[in-house]
Amino acid sequence: MRIGILGGTFNPVHIGHLILAEEAVWKLKLDKVIFVPAYMPPHKKIEGGSAAEDRLSMVKLAIEGNPKFEVSAVEIDARKRSYSVDTLKSFKDTYGSGAELFFLTGSDSLKDLFSWKDIEDIFKLSKFVVANRPGYPVRNVPKEAETVAITPIEVSSQDIRRRLGEDKSIRYLVPEKVREYIISKRLYLTREG
Image 1 (cartoon, helix red, strand yellow):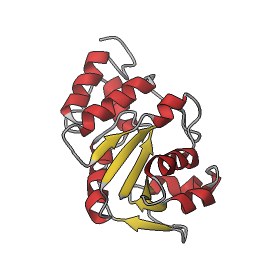
Image 2: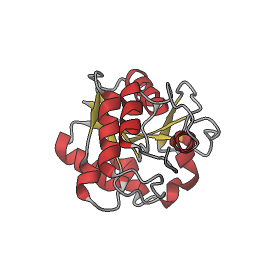
Image 3: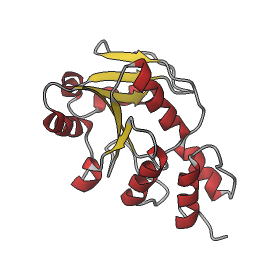
Image 4: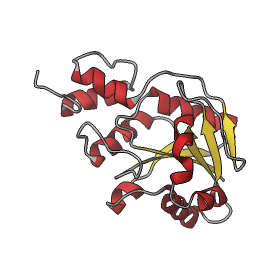
């Protein structure tokens, strides 16, 4: 079995994440992609005040209806700082040595890649795949990694949070069910109104 692992804060999940996962499925011939929302990532602060459970719920809504997509709460359930190496070990235990894991990340991660905990073990546990991301050139890719070209969509969770704080539309930047969830829970609002 060929399994893509796509981690992140998903704060919120958006169409760029979904396009990356969908294109990775067919370009890398994956059986599925598992989205893994981080509880507390080591390299960034989770901004906007959304609880881990909200981010998990939004991913579940976003991937509904796609039989190739799954979500795992392994990092959220651990209730501690999330390290990719630990997550990959967990999936190796779950799926066994016969499963091939493909760790999917964006080109924005390349700048601090070698500060990641046990990066060499990550390379051993998985095929490390770097996808292009607008504004982050795919360069200085380690020899252990491969690249995959994804349709460039210039959307970011940070921009979505900013738009919401400014009372601007996020329609079509996130799946409609995610947009409705954000509105119903009043997530990412910086002021009342």
